[in-house]
Length: 341
Image (cartoon, rainbow, N blue to C red; front, side):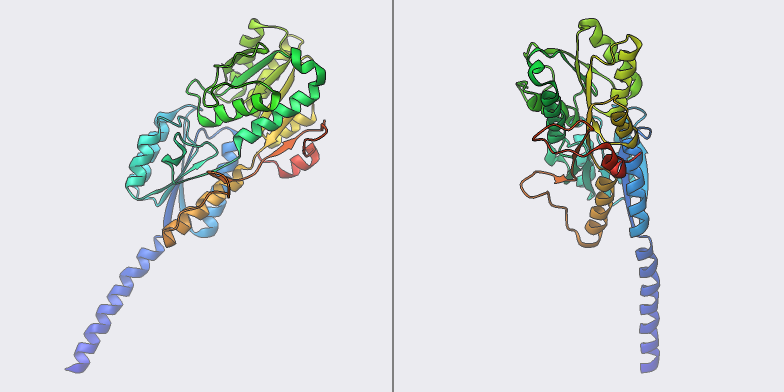
C-alpha cells in the first residue's frame, strides 16, 4: 500500500517536472521598436539587440516605422508585443508625447519599457532610458563650430535641419544643445523655433534622411544664400544638405555639423563634407536594453540611471580632424575604429 502511494507521488512529481521544463525552455521574449529599419543607426541598434538576445537566449521580435515620424506603426507594434506576452519593449519613439498612452498600456500589462536614444515626454513614462546625452552631443558640435569660426561667430548665419514637426525630444535636445554650445539663447529649452537671435536664418525638417536634408537646405538657401553654418539632426540629413550646397557651388561656404558617428558619417568628416560630428553608440544601447529585460524577467529588478542623471548614459565623443583648443575630441581614425553602419 505504501509502495503504491509513493509510486503515485513520484509519478505526480514527474508530471510536474515534465510541465516545468518546457515552461522554462520557452524563455524570455522581448521587442525592439525603432523609428525606421533603413537608417544605419537603427540597423546597428537591431544588430546589437539581436546578438545580445541570441547570447542570452532571449526571443527577440523587431518592428519599425515606415519612415521617421511614423508613430502609428509603433503603436501597432506595442499592441502586438503585449498580445505576444513579451517581458519587455525597447523603443526609439517617433512621437515622444503621442506614444505615452500606448507605453502606459504595456507597463500596466507588466512589461518593462525602455526608451532607446530618444527619451519619452515625460521621461518617466518609460521604466528607463538608455541614451546618448543628446544635449551634450549638441553642445559639443555647437562649441566646435563657435571655436572654429572664431571672431566670425558674431556675424554667422545659422540654419537648423531638424527632424520632424512633432519635435521629438532627441530633436529638441540636439538642437538646443547646439545653440547653447554656439552661444545662442535657446529661450524655452523644450521647444524649437522660439529663439530671437538674429544670426538664425531658420529651421526646417528632414525626416532624418538625405532627401529631406537636401530639400530643407534648398529651402533655407532661399531664405538667405549667405548661410554659413548648418546644424543637422543626423548625418544622412547632413549629406543631403551638402548635396544641395554643392549643386549651387556653395559647399565651401558652409560649415556643417551633425550627430551620429556612423561609419558613413565619419567618412564624411574625413572627406570634409561634415566638419564635426558627435558619435553615439547604438549597439551598446540595444545590447544593454536586452540585458535589462532578461534581468527583469529573472529577478524583477529594473535598471537604474547613471549617477547624477535621469537616464543611463551610453556615452558620446566629438569626432573631427580639425580639433580646437579646450575641447576634447577624437580624430576620424579613432572614430572609424568605433563607428557603426
